[in-house]
Image 1: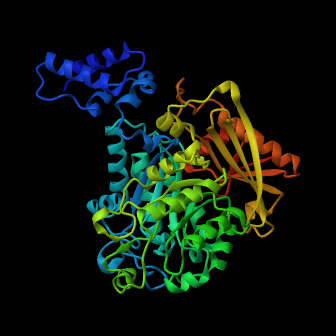
Image 2: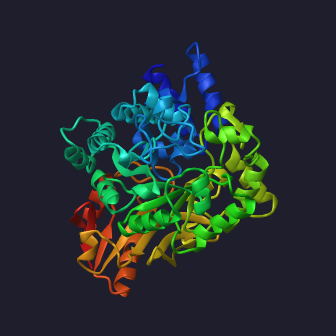
Length: 527
């Protein structure tokens, strides 16, 4: 399809006040017939010719899978090559590992694992190809959040870690750097900005020395495999760490300014419905835990695991889909507003699941179950502006927007969840996590003065390109500055004279404009 035909379709779309997908298809079909085309033009072909000032209104109609960027960033998952688990043995439920030729904890048939294998687990190729895929289906990829998957990343050789992160950043930056330091520096001003790096690790591999390495690599968020909060279950499944490790690593991660995600696995051997629900209540209410985010993965029986043998012997039975829906519904009823439930199931193909949840739409089943009882989840994701618009067609009323503060004790410090919300329509526009750290914070940048930490700042809604402003979007409307001012105000009120931000590489320039300066891996400001 040539440029003239694409522009003709775009011009017809521009005449419609709110084009629907049906109207888009009708216009494409009509233009294709007019020009005797063999096939109807693909949306990705039309998107190539869309001007920047037309993106906000038309791009969202032509884009596929808009939910992938509804939270304000484009997430790119990248898989490391297979490495052995550092505790030397596999957990009872683990389907992967080098012996099977796939990354630890994965089957090798998850979408991210398959992309990794197809690209020879090369970091640059995986990230570059994924960004190009997003662009081809109409997504703005100006703000990329990297998630490094494949097991305990910090247990791999340090040289491998640094080379892998450099490859990821080179792909985002669109250039080959000479070193990790140069790649990080280029990330601050690139056309595509890195707005976060996430790694996976174990609780016993998230102590002070590990966190220092994370910060050097540019990591902003840590996902740790907690799975449950009972030591007897850890023994049964051969987990190789204790609840004490979970509590200690949680505090260290928060006290270093990083965000923390718990991977939770209900339905493990030794547990049951009541015990699992009690475990979630514990991590929501006990100040030793209180993660920022959750990924909930009901335990599944996969062939080739110890769990599979126990199931065949009649010693273990996982949750059915119906039982998992009931449990997660109960969890969503009690989840605090400052937690984001990121996922509720793994991307494992159904045919590999010998027993357990075998429906791929578990989240939707849970939401439907809540609606039947007149309830809805109040976690961050379910209230974010982008998801409220995509799922319910609800937009915020800017005249009703207010700044709210929810303070709570966590990991021997105090957390302040500051949010910008339209409470009337239940829409969350942005949020910030401010921490008054414990007395055990080990980083010198934090110890030198009475210092507060901004661990996260996010404005919700579809991605808006860096330096642009769209009337229908919420990013770049001043909400971030509003949240930042509130955090500084709260810090000063409590006698803090320095504030640190755990900034992503690509957002350092934003904080520099607001008076923050370089401070080790952080950005900071004297109040």
